[in-house]
Image (cartoon, rainbow, N blue to C red):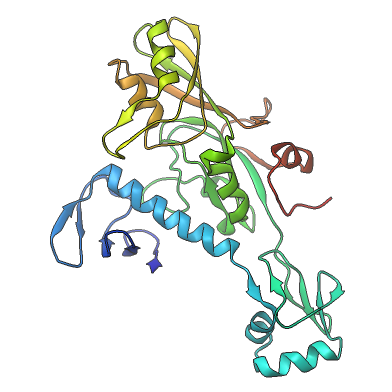
Length: 304
């Protein structure tokens, strides 16, 4: 169960593992109270709020990936009885991606074109967007107090999009957005080993000890796990590039924090073979080209 409302509205999330329902009364806030079903209040720390946001994001992504039966889709969109869909199919009146429908049990994806007597019932287009995120913008689809990355995309389909890998409020660089849940899940899975590269500037000088520690992984108490090996290339005394195949909460800042070295700036350069366009100014965006999507090697729905 999940619901989300804009602004200061209530957000309900069901957590299967702990079998409790959390009510986040103000999602954009940085502090506050979360109530559990047992009515025991829990401090709404920034980390916990981010965790809830991520859970909601995963639920939204799942919804954009779901397939449905042809008879159900036709019944809902054409407002006819599901039993009548079989007759329409036998009469050749239903088409799927411009081909005669095969069966009422045919599975229909989120971007499958479905028509009844040339009336379009579903014709969503897959969207894949590159955005140059500036500092001072929230990596969220909506926020009552701050500008969000969605606000920077003045496209009619912007509210269909979700974020593929967040960046912190003051972090900058490459951000990918899509309405294709399967594609975003594939990019986010650590086992697919999609490398994300970041340029980082630090408060204190770097040393070879950092490289060894990043390569070995670090234990994070909050998640109760050890990070996967990360690549670190020292560019100068105060600047480095970091390669990750996962994205834990404030991971890069926390890894440098083990050396008591504060991250002054963090900029995402690339995700796999997709590199931030040199001519894309902060706050600007463009749709990804078919060649860029093909280079990733992940299944997608964009067609020439």
